[in-house]
Amino acid sequence: MSIGLGTRFRVAMEDVFTHGAYFRTVEPDNDFDLVRARAADPQKRDKETGERLWVVTVLDGDPEARTAEVKVRIVDVHAEATSEKVAMGWHLDGRVSVVVGTHTHVQTADERILPEGTAYLTDLGMTGSYAGVIGMNKTDVIARFTSAIAKRAEHSSGQVRICAAVIDVDETTGHARSIERLNLGHEH
Ligand SMILES: [Fe+2]
Image (tube, rainbow, N blue to C red; front, side, top):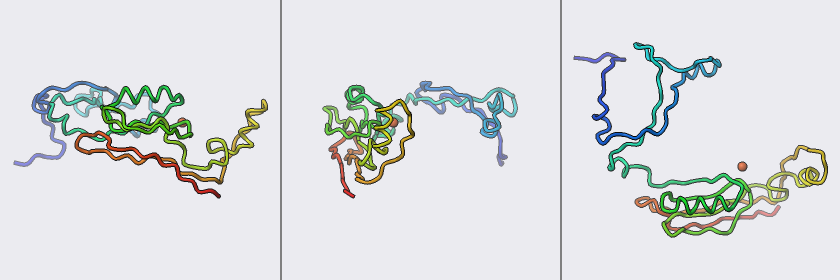
């Protein structure tokens, strides 16, 4: 016996998720071409029943499925306030491998391993030109701050630095072993 392409068969929920499943999100399954054509209703329909199709993400209720999950988790907190990033570090300590901040462009010097095993740094800092104001031409930026004229700022160049962090994570536990902050200058 052969099964032709496109053959439909029913799958029981309990055959796939032996311990049940938890809903996370439900979104319309949109047809890419219809979205691109800006159709008013781009949602896909079932070929036989005509019913709308949905994409449902779930969390598998099987505890063993969860142990096979990703161990190394890296969280980039893209935010302005240092206090918010510190709070996020404590909030996620032990639940993720790494919490590092971005957005301010100015590197902080508070790298550490939190008590439950999460590597933390409030802001990684910018890789780029330090001859200006967080990467933009300093004359342009100062003009914006000192006059009512909103001049478009160009990129700055020179005094290039690499800012980053090297983090060692135990892949079996997902806990961080070390975090080393990098701030490498190249003065030209
Ligand atoms: Fe940003």
